Length: 207
Image (cartoon, rainbow, N blue to C red; front, side, top):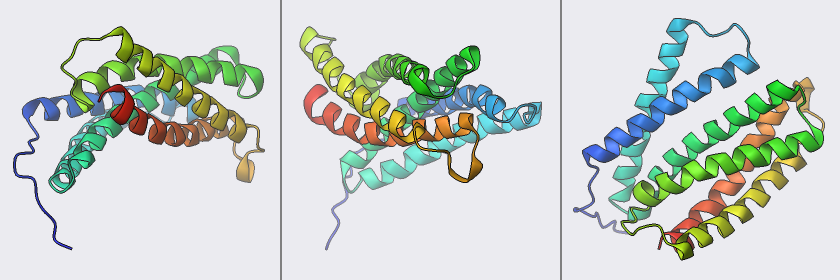
């Protein structure tokens, strides 16, 4: 099989800058999550290392998908989408941890309610990043596009909350804490909704 490389595909300064911003924000948002799971583990040097590490990793990962995009452009688009998805994931889990911490519960009906709330807030952030960067839609926001986004995001919400609630209802494996198990449930749900969102956004929302 002979690969055909696409010469006019570009990764410009805007892509590098925005991927760095995403990595930086992910690093910042990861700190309270880590602190909640492992109290007193963070030092100033470790915190700086985490922020810089995520920033560098974000740029490197986008560069890798750009190289793959030379073969199939969808890889580069998915790389941007995945970067946005990573930011949304950390934002989602960060809000979830904050709500769980404030109320002091990690399962049951409260978990499902808090998971739905965190997912919706992260999805609002997702709309603008995906529309104007990942899928590069230069068209203004319209009622039809926004309605499609809400519909497919709501389906993604059902998938996300349903999968998370199903996993968290299972007894934690190997004696894991309820808090850690709740976060594992959230991550599994993110993977399921990530696949759904990319396909629906690409083909039905930001066409």
